[in-house]
Picture 1 (cartoon, rainbow, N blue to C red):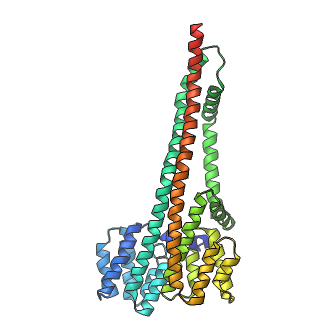
Picture 2 (cartoon, rainbow, N blue to C red):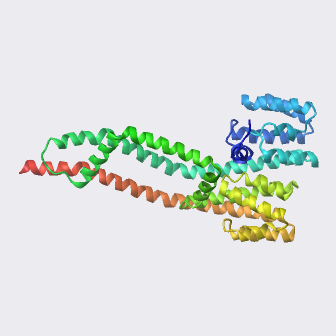
Picture 3 (cartoon, one colour):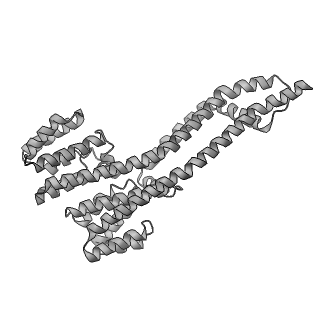
Length: 365
């Protein structure tokens, strides 16, 4: 079966690795345990057999068993793992291959485990930051639908028994409820159709790039997406550079770990420029999508030969920046959601209780 370019990119990315059939923590734990057993002098096949017995995930256990068979048949460990890109993507196999060549497989595996752990923690930080607004917005939508379908129609029937003009907030509530109830099937079909069409568009070559660029322009959240991508670029590029992988191959691997097809396209352009003899820092500074600081600092690394120190410092800096942006997101969204909730409650209260007040005044007369 021929895979599309998008499919291959996803199968090669670190983020895809951490979201596939095996649990993230299981793969990280396996890599750490594998590094420990290799460091203790246990042969690769024996170490893998030991880890197969320790593995609880049936799918992962079967993959490791097949890797053992391939290694016993004479295949390199990196090649055997490369047969299962849904579990061991390119970054994993390339680093393992470097460890095999240099004879430092235990150090490479330990480095790889730390890299995956860091990526996992970054994802957790972002998910935790987005969890609160997501829950609040979901709760508001659920409350709106429940009130529209079950609460307002009952009040509408009561108010309809009296010959009186209803206040504007009440008419808005009744009109909204009536529209949702009378067109519920149509709205569901349109929503599902729009969602399916959007997902299909995102998977196209042009759509994935446009969506990747659009995500970076979302107020507040777009900056978080950008910081995450830059942070991944810095620490993964540093990990690959540290094991001696050539810069062109490193850029190819890194481009697929950013989680954004638009930024992936930019890195691919940088790679093309480097292959033509240009400096990576110059290409980054010419572009408008990556921060100038990133290009300037990489230039320092190119001139001094201390790229590992520069990339490590950049990783720490952008991690701090990411934490600041996440805190800013919380500080900004909480009052905004509170204001939206307050306005919604006010409209509901006015729509429900104003007619009651009018009726009491009518009965007094």
